[in-house]
Image (cartoon, rainbow, N blue to C red):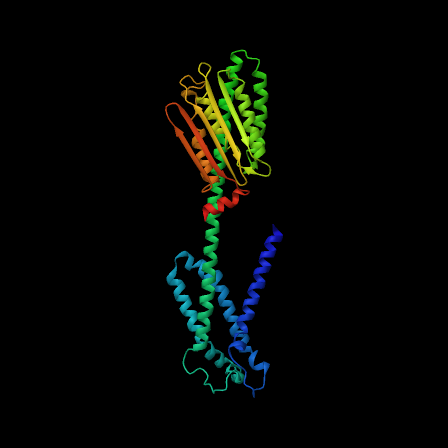
Length: 368
């Protein structure tokens, strides 16, 4: 971290030095040297040249790091304006001030090799050239600082929003775990109360499922194979409490290798199907399909709506479906399509999801 910070500062110093060298070379670029004129370095790199350019450089950084942050950014426009006007007058009068205190009058006269035309030094109270350069430095320093602060504000706003999204996603995951555990323990309790010999297997399945939730759900993305295995384990555990009146079909197709997905995406839909789609009294069928393509998946669940379902409405928390809708919106905005169809006899879900390798990129797109 320190190395990156040092490199950033070093790069900024290099850029500033290069920019000022270009600035100091402007007279040599904009004005041609007379053929018959002798090149006299002392006429160019004089004390006047050095002092004036040091003043311009100082003004650049004073304006960028003192006047704009301390005055303009804090809405002290009047004070900022008065100081700039005062400095403008000072820079405009500087040639006369320098002439008054300097005995080397020729040092501030126009360099003879810059122009063939005779020039009269300082014809008015304020030097037009000094004012022009001052205004140029003022415009550049103000523009660079304002643009830099705007980019920093935008970056900070995006970081704040991203942190807010991370916090909300973490909260949604925390909601899933107790919600899932509540329903699963309720199922195991039913097996234990009936004295079923399947209770031990259900506990082992629950242990495997909870291990996945604890180790994988904290990640933004998990391998698609693991999410499929988790879904199969959950279905197998639910089957332990079903009778021969209920049928559950889960048919994944396609190659999941190398693909990733947000964890616990399928769970609320499968869980909801077992809440309302199976019964010990009526025949029922739950059809779960997962079709995997190169960069997309198509997931669907269809179940009957039974009045004598294993879970009564009072036993549900109503958290799962609303929770997953919000997670999809946060994680896969513009990359998913969720269709929920319900009638008197059945309930179906169809989720079309475009896969991605980095959810951070998706959040950046969402914030842009």
